[in-house]
Length: 195
Image (cartoon, rainbow, N blue to C red; front, side, top):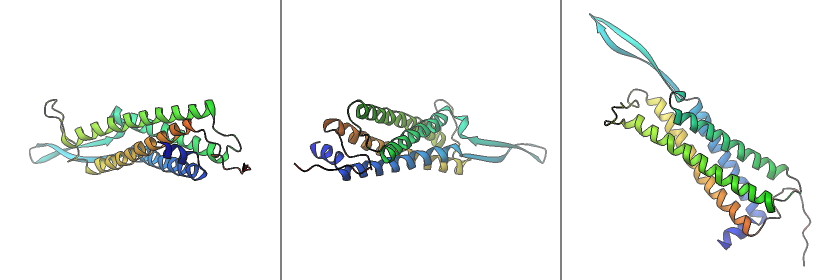
């Protein structure tokens, strides 16, 4: 833990934290975009009248499942949080994150880990039902009929779980900065004093 705290307060650690935030931003934003644009329409034969087939068109959209809507909203919120933290770190000038500000960032990071983890797990549950169905509840699987929809959803889930891991690491680093407050994370040049 001491090494993590020391790395978090070094100049190199600040760049690593910035890089982790950029990766987390890209992962959560891509998860939100892929799931938000996830839609597939197919036409199926649902019956026959004599020799004439009766066809119906069905559409699978993320809006049909509340867990997927929550997934998109949560990923957008975490992306926005990371974008604000990136902007604060780059354009913050000489305002160091100490005291209450540092505690606020650590708490917000932990809340965002919880939010994205809940959303990714809820979406993963619904994806499992879509892939395999549930015989006890008599829910049929849909991934055998809407393969592209399910593939896009799987890609969004992979990106979201990558975002969860990145946000866990970011949260651990920001918590470790509470132990030894950072005086370097602004990109503006600060004079160093040699004792």
